[in-house]
Length: 360
Image (tube, rainbow, N blue to C red; front, side, top):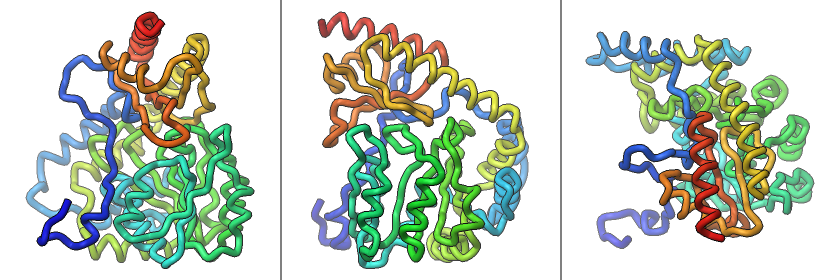
């Protein structure tokens, strides 16, 4: 775009493109990694109660009740927790606070594409580090960059869109390789089988861990994210937040978030259901000839040797099933498929059988 009214940087921005949010009814929506199960009934009750009074007043700018619930869950104190309007806002503040160093930010070449968008917004140079041919993060490749002046490191663990998780000793290697820069670990999907780096926070002053309630807590529509780290990192994020929006979470989001962390039994029930469906879907997809990367997330990343991914995605959509296809180098023949309910997974498999018959 060109406009005499806009700042020059606006023309250079390449915005993030989210997955399709269709307006049609009765689609099997497996393209944006939402949880297929609704939030805890206690969450709904808490939101309804919060809506009965107080909406004419500003919410707590610190969201202290939610900070405390998160801290208790993770064995921290509230002073180690930062809240934001979804993890995307938390990430945006973190990129602003820590990575505008005038040198490149290290990140995998295949990862959450919003990272590069933030770099474009804040004019942060990027150094992409290639995943291996097996789509694994190669810590030795980051070691080869030791001594290079870098702004920091950002990784998603488990990675998106591959779903592959890193063991904690690899995260520790990254932290030790760049001790004077922040290593940001984005754990949006960690509750579906990964290991959380939150346990390492006390040992590493350069570790920031970002979470969301959109996935394992079934609250994508509520927009709640948070970061955990040592106090000096949280202080920096608070300074940025309070220079941008002092009230990022409304009263309903705070109430719902607290209830989500209090209902541990429901959280365990639904995340176990997703992981169980994932195991069954992996076997069924492999029977159909797909190569399925090992996943610790609520999605799988798959390719097929006989059919191109774009054609499969188009065929599935014609049968009422949405999956995500990325038209990007190295992964253009992969599909990312969110884990649905057992009925949704069955619908996907039936649609795939029909698509393959049509492609034969």
